[in-house]
Image (cartoon, rainbow, N blue to C red; front, side, top):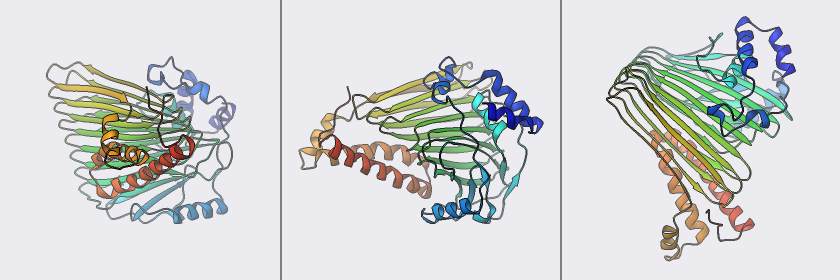
Length: 418
């Protein structure tokens, strides 16, 4: 942390305050309830040096990465090593604008959010004007061009005005072993605004900590989804507040884990106003010695009467050594609500496998078909054909690699989970 201390000495007062907040608590350990299953202090013994500002060669490499990727949207915003690269960005559609600004300290009490606030070299805000309707998704591409041990910090705000509507796709690419990434996305939806947001982690950093903070005003609606298919240790933490009546948040995700990867999804949804609706639906496929984690907490404050909330976590284990930790929670202080939660962990249904194999389908193919159906149900909740298809491609590629690994490395018969 010595380098962080040196950086702080030349920073703005805002960053100094954020760093002081981080130092006061330090890296989280299992003693912190929300980090109970992920001891970051043990996993992050050494802080990697900050990635340098991208030079012309790094920008050229980033352009090559973009050229090799299928476009999800007509409009791309490119952040390279946490910095906006204007020559790689597209022009925003009418009604949307991008600005660089000093974001205020987050209300979220989390040390990694404070560290992000302190160390982000740039902070950018994308604003959708009141009443603007952006038909095509806007894509944020977070590219890591740093080699070796480097740390990256990215901070983006998305603000939708009254009755505005837009969709967003955030992808993280280019990071390899040794890279430590800390990214924050802050979404603010004004009255009657509507947004869809999809994030995908498909590269291979040593550490990926992604924080998503959202606030929904009266009648605002958000559908947010994430696909985690990479990273050695991935932590996605979501903090949402429904502060306006009739606000609606639909949160979901699909986590794909193999080898010794570890992925942690921790969320908190606070209902602070009447007649709010929230849905949380998360699924995971865990193989080899990987570890999956889901912690979800829905808090219904006393003023949030007529709240409708439902949370579910489901996981399929493909190995006797795979693990899944699920901890759904409800804290209800109102007396007129409909809320529930549930969690399941198990292996593929042997009866379904037998049924398919009895009809001439090879076991490995039958397994892949069942897993695809399991993941597809989660992806289908995105309710946007363009965004959903952008998730299906890496999902199917991961399934193909898994099937090949089971045949080549383990034989055609999958080792069942206990």
